[in-house]
Length: 213
Length: 245
Picture: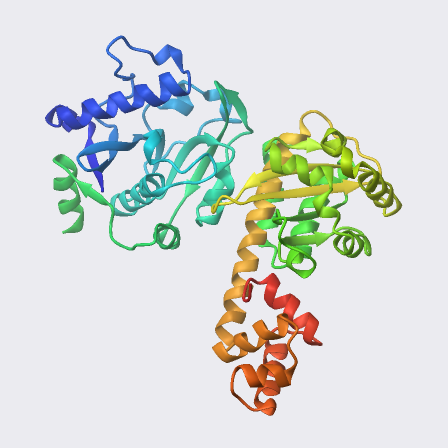
């Protein structure tokens, strides 16, 4: 299950959000060595944890085991403000285009370096479900080059925005991923089940009800 | 002047329109021939258990010079090829030359012979791009030619377009598989399985408790649907498409 929480509501889910920032610190600072994000309280937060950020939180047995954050590209985001060198030319910006950052899965829920695993694929299905529900048709993602083929096989419409660049321990390529119903179908087939994975909380639930009516 | 990214996106657009492995190869080599890379193969890595025909199912695009792949498969060079060994141990793209340290002492003689034979087919230098498929299998594109000149900015472009080439080739293979699978009956697939084991029509009819005439008819239908001229070809096509193990 993936909870979708608006940045506006983050204060209302202190336990969930505390686990989120702890997982982000564990993965990005301790594991990937992004030391400029290090924090004494072992909680990673940055300038993009704004009210307009949307948090996707994967939960198993009441524990946060996976996470990703969606940022509107009309506002400052990582590709525009932190890693502009990953993009050749100007970073694309549009109302239906969000940027996915801080994708992470707790180590116990990964399937080696070569596999995607059930939490990992649930996060992918999650942002596609959320996007199709919310009028978002494409995302920008800065991911390891290894992901390009996976995205193609999952029927994303893949458009590289630049060439791979070494960031910390990883080789990263900025990519635009378009998606539609066929993508969702491919993801669900890969997951092995067709039940929706996202559950909207607080403001997001109100918004979805308004969109549906 | 078009940027490196524009150029890459043009090649990708062309590969995305390809409807055959040949067209994928054309799309990719149209671009890489500027660097002396004028032919390619692409596929997933075979396991040490795959011998003979079973190796062929791993080839997604096979456009090396006529005669070379036949010899390569017949002599089972895949098991000693230093390029394959490097692909399996390191995911970074590389010039073929950089695979030489992967020649094993105990097979060095065969490996040297293989490299010399490849030169006779104008495969003197090349570039390989390893990658990992969604199900965790190692795959690669290998591009070759007589004389290569790969400028420093090119490997990133070659890697990117190679990834799209494999993606497209996997997509085409899965469409072909679905199309043919939908047309074959379970009985026809069963007959093909036994034919692949080397059973005669009479033996198949005994195993499946049907008449020899019926077994013959099932196989003839399967040949037609697999667009095969004879039984070995039908079996090979079925294995390549993953319809039988």
